[in-house]
Amino acid sequence: MRAASAILLSFILLIGLAVGSSALPTAVLSIDTPKGHADFKVEIAGDQASQEKGLMFRKKMAADAGMLFDFHQTVMTSFWMKNTILPLDIIFIRSDGTISSIAANAVPFSEASIPSSEPIRAVLEINAGRAKALGFEPGDQVHAAIFHNAR
Image (tube, rainbow, N blue to C red; front, side, top):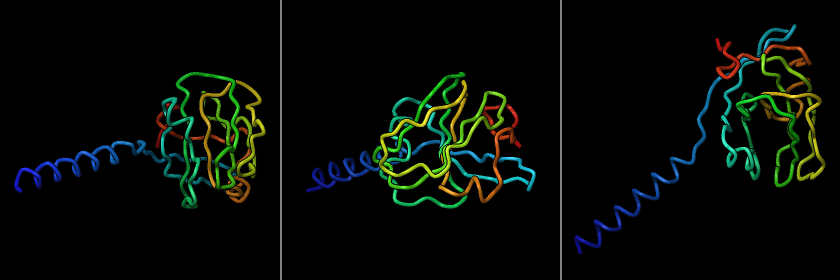
């Protein structure tokens, strides 16, 4: 009986560790606009697996949350909304941390391509409408560790 309990407890602990280890790292980034700055707590999608999944299947996200896709180099890229329930603003960011372009109100579940207009270093996904509400525009500065300008 003790052996069975010990095995069961070990199994439960292993499952808990496996679930906990799937969480992405987080960071706070800030975006400067003429209206002031806005802070977001973002999950960092820094590897291929996390970038492929992105925000798929998420049903809610806090107003000050998002996901930062770090490509670790300058790339041309394209996004889509397949299996993404939440409408999103997709913000393409140059390697110097300035906003290149914003794809506002990306349509949930759409398989249409949403390409960057130039080579970029990262993409920030936030709730749809937030970029406009906060006054984000191309050229605004994003502060984050990957741009070596975090606050």
